[in-house]
Length: 592
Image 1: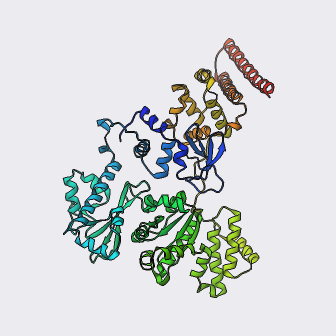
Image 2: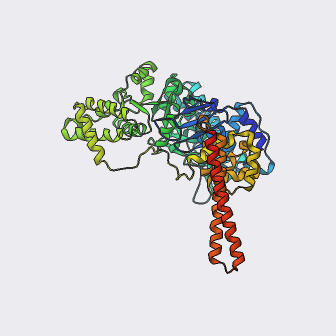
Image 3: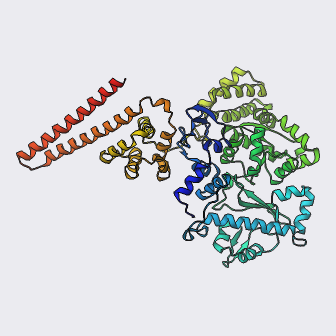
């Protein structure tokens, strides 16, 4: 892993503003004092607890505890390594990162090497498709799809020839190691120990992460394989449950339109883009997952499901509805006539007709009822459909939203609104407590208090007294836990708050980021807060000494003079602790 100096990292951070960066994917609202608030992108919530402090260039979520600087956000939000996030921010600020030491090159970073290999493999597949003879089969198939050449180029489509070692041989000539080839998932080790290509005689579709990096590939068979589509296996780069096809291409259009079109197939999405509809994404050959739903929520508050119009597509849409609703998204479902998929419908009816179908798409409740029409013809079936809808609605954490959806359920099932709400209440009482798909702020038990947070917030804001605090820390007995860890770093390195974040992890990091974004208006007398805390620590230290002396008295064989000396020391410590306590109270009364 390349290593960069603290000065290089600081230069990149200084050239990027946290509000500007986070504002690209979050809806920020001013909260006063250089602070902004937003709904947290890392867990589901209704009331914003995600706070950004522009002055300190830090963020912290008071719901789930995640926090840090711009680098930490980009790493977490886009799933990048430290070096990848730093490079992205450096590129954005037109800063050229220095070459790392030869001793710590990318050759030691498997993730970076697999990324390089994937890029090389993608170019290899594209060259094959363009080859007059080798790529003829792939080009003939694309003729049937009738995609514009610009779309084929944009999505970097390629071709894997029929044969077991085409990619392997090309990669070997380029100097890629067998370790990297195997780690990419594009090659597999056979029974005799040699590597062979997994994609053979297939049209190749590169799969990219949200940052536009090629992390995997899909392959459409052009022969007689029973597996029409296969994808790369999961690797150090690729987790299929966390990737949506074309999200890096679609996210800007999703923000602009306010909704995402969620489809099933690669060619559905490519057809949409081919027709100028650029807010479409697809699952990568798998059922929709919670992680994918949360990815969508970062860029748009609403999703329109446009799955195939056949029975399998409708059933997939029904399952997708539940996950999307539970992720806090508004959901509509567009069904296309005659069982067509989006690819066929856009090509046959045109983009305008498709967009009109999307515009008419009903909410998930009417769709769910319509798709279950046969069941609703009986009382038992209607009850079952109602309970299925109740199970989805029960995942919502907004009472007003629940109330409105129950009205829609009543109307769609033609039952009285009051009866629907009563049945919903009964269903809630008898529903087994299954774990929520969307988990609210799953964090370990936090071992710091609001007082700890306010103390640190006051400590860093009273900059004129930092020298005095540094002297106090030299002689102060530090508590155990996150506060003590932070103060120990201050004691060792001085009050260098800018360098503290990357020395902390876990609860200490949570505490520090929370303190950095703590509202200044809540710290009416920061000097008093700091003074009182140091006073309490002095009292705690004195009480510990007294306890230690009392234990020594009980267990000592010392003579009377030594015992009397210990008792005098105990009285002195108790008197000092009481004096300090009274002094802090008197100080607070005078300033109050």
